[in-house]
Amino acid sequence: MILLRVWLTEKPYRIFREGIGRARRRFRATTNEERTAFHLWSMDFESNYDIAASAQFIHTHNFTRVALQFPDHLLKDSTRVVTALRKRLQSLKKCDATGSGHETDVGLFVMADTAYGSCCVDEVGASHINADCVIHYGHTCFSPTTTLPAFFVFGKASICVADCVESMSKYALANSKPIMVLFGLEYAHSMQQIKEALLESSMSCRFDAKPEVHFANVPSSVMFPSKDIKKINGLQEQASGASGTTCSIGGLTWKLPEGQSMDDYLLFWIGLDDSAFANVVLTFNACEIVRYDANEKQMVTDLFQQRRILKRRYYLVERAKDANIVGILVGTLGVAGYLHIINQMMELITGAGKKAYTLVMGRPNPAKLANFPECDVFLYVSCAQTALLDSKEYLAPVITPFEAMIAFNRGSQWTGAYVMEFRDLINLPEMEVIDQEEARFSFLKGGYVEDFENQENVEEEREVLSLVNATEKALQLRNNSNALMKGNARSGAEFLANRSYQGLNMPSENNSPEPYLIGRRGRASGYEDEKNKQ
Image (cartoon, helix red, strand yellow):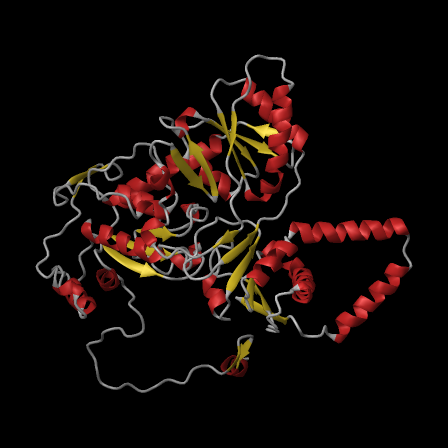
């Protein structure tokens, strides 16, 4: 993590003052048209980064230490954002007529190189500087925070409203089902214009059948931490009843009338083919979905590649069923409820007769996970938009908590529904436990397998010396040729005992001291002994 510290009352550096002076002299020499263009460009920058709203959020809540979180592609604008925020905060401070007399300095800290996905609020990085809040810029998954309030700046991507409305109207008139419009948060600023343009288009429509189009609500930019873990996914439960059901995904919320479900709607997505869109495709895989590409100004109806993801995920579930050792990858330290779901997954894996290890390594990659070859499968606990990893490059498959519940619950079947948010799994009712000691049929191995072994010291493995006991037990599994018997390891200690190389501390029958040897000296291009030979 990289932190750049900028105080509100600090004077600009000399090089900055000289640069500003040159810019002012150059600005005086420009024409009126160039000055107007420069002013509009500056206004667009402040509008795109919501400088006024961000400063008002800081000023209203009297925050004194503010963390500014930027993704990598927006980091180049961080210094200009800090300068604009400083000027706005100074103007608010002068215009404050409350008479409180507070002259507290506001510290602005730029955060970069987040440990996990940039779409989540980096509360761990903000805690290193004792920040009071986080202002998050760019794409976000809108996952709830646990300790700090956050203000989200979605950005304002350009879109042709007329072309979008025309494509939406044609698609609506060609189908009999109602349409639910979902969108990327970078297009949230244009939703009101699209609604008004669509209303005018429908009023001037010559056909009797008017298009029935519904829009998801634009989320609020302000988020406060979730205190109650049990209520962080209670939107759907709270609104279900006589008035209908409220659905939510990626920060978007909308209400369905009583007796209707998402299967009764067609989905119209406005935005890019990114992780947010993949989340929508998997969650509502039973709906017909089209995507409007604002950059290309065209509709995309071929979602075959996105549909293939479900087949791939089902295959990974079958691979996970045959796993003996599961590594739980902690993919977030800030999303509310992550500790609860980790403990829940640990109990699920242990109840299925498998061994679980918790691994914290930041953003996973094939090189990191290759250091744990004993794990047959990895379970990735993260936000919904970073949970899907293309595990083709990994030595072992990587699954989500929802897929783990299907794989490790005996008798559970995949109905086609898919849950991306792990918070939606916290309050699910417990499934009926089926006798898991019976053999089950493995589709990959083509026969019956047993998940449980007859072990006499199951309780002892839970004690402090469990690693030693498991290693001693594995070392005793020898045949007549004094070699370890081949078999699938049930724990990390047993896997280590089956390896031919177990590190530098190899057991040796000869425990007597041995003389040390002097190694080569010199450079790799030519050691001293090699020169002597020449």
